[in-house]
Amino acid sequence: MSGLKKMNKSIPFDVNETHCPVCGSCQIKHFSNAKHKEVKLSYDICKNCGIIFMNPHPTEEWYDIFYKQYYRSFYSDPISPTPDEKVKQRKRARTLLQFLKKDIYGERYHLDIGCSTGEFSQALKSEYPISRSVGVEPDQTYRQSAESLGIKCYDNLSSVSNDKQSFTLISMNHVLEHILKPSQFLSNLKKDLLERGGLVYIEVPNYAGLFGSFEIAHPIVFTEESLENTLKLAGFKIIECKSHGNPKSNNNNSKYYTSVLITPQKNKLQVMTPRYVTRIWAFKLASWKNSTLENNLVFLLKFPIRLLRHFGFPKHTIG
Picture 1 (tube, rainbow, N blue to C red):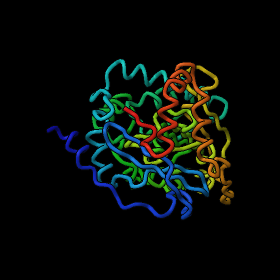
Picture 2 (picture 1 turned 90 degrees about the horizontal axis):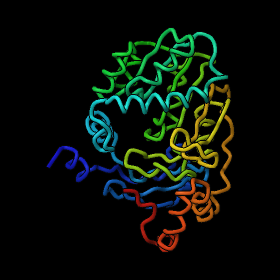
Picture 3 (picture 1 turned 135 degrees about the vertical axis):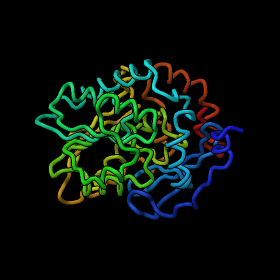
Picture 4 (picture 1 turned 180 degrees about the vertical axis):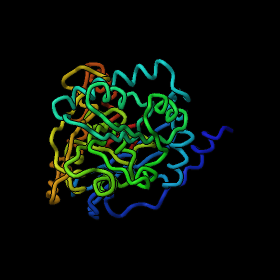
């Protein structure tokens, strides 16, 4: 049996959380069951801040080994970056630059957490006066690809902190949903690595788009509202927020992803409880109606099965 299969067969799960990993509230209830790559998952929702989170989740030690050794093969990504993979990342980098275009100005020290092959950092350097570019990437082969572009790379964030570096721009593209306690993580990031008045760019999968939310690597599932609450609790305010489908879809109704640009706020802002937490069934149903024609057809064909699953059968099964 391969190392990856052994990992899947014996995933150590922590004990069930009794409090929300974002706001600390004990007002949590079961939200959905899921299956990803034959691994059964369970998600709860916080009735205070609206965050959806895996409960129980794999241990931090398991995640650490998973990201360093098995993440790429688990998701069927190339073990080493291929030319096609780099082209795909350049395409995504262009969509990110469009979002940031009017807000990035002046000389910047840039940190890209989860930098992969370094294509986004490279694209950013070609457009803006980035005088220092640093990346964090746990996978060795992808980290080496980024280093070949002249980007100084670390295998973990602690090493960046230990070097006493600070940055005026930090980016995290599809990273925050992998963090067990995202609000605490962002608060530490602001304190340890972000210069005063600096900017942080974040993109996460959006539950409203029903794409890539319930996965073994995603202990946290965001909506626009719960992402905003997470940022507030970490001491940030939003400069710009947009839900979109790029680069997966150009359909204006697609909400596969949510992108935000944020900056530190002196005082923590008040959490606003999302309306959907009082009518979860309606929230789930509404989330199916706003994507592409293809997704709407799938919704109609599978609606009877989803209706049955709502009354106790496993929901949101993902291959």
